[in-house]
Image (cartoon, rainbow, N blue to C red; front, top):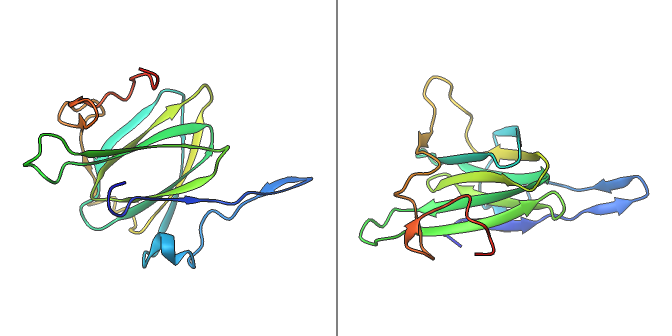
Length: 163
């Protein structure tokens, strides 16, 4: 994994009513270090929707939790321009196996809703969104400069996982 990218397994506590899960706690210091959450967001994506690529250059860290459906979360580092390809982490997250994924905002990152039902994502950020001066740099979802280090070719969000 890229430095700072981490996955934290969340515990589901089932009972006869359903289940309960803590999705974020300030005392999970081994996971969040010294980050302070300032904003919580909720997103729904239809199957096959890709929300990529973007990054934050002012120190924001994102914490993503898929509550329903499934998503492919990708994080890409192209900081070392001397290499012909960067490093890419692919994380599959779903409501069936609750995880919190920590993404330092300086990495390019995005998601794709996978499966046949809409996916629901809750994410927390360490910076407030500034409507007048957003901390977001964007690239197209199919940017050919984002290279899949496994193939040396442009990253393909739609490549079947079995080929």
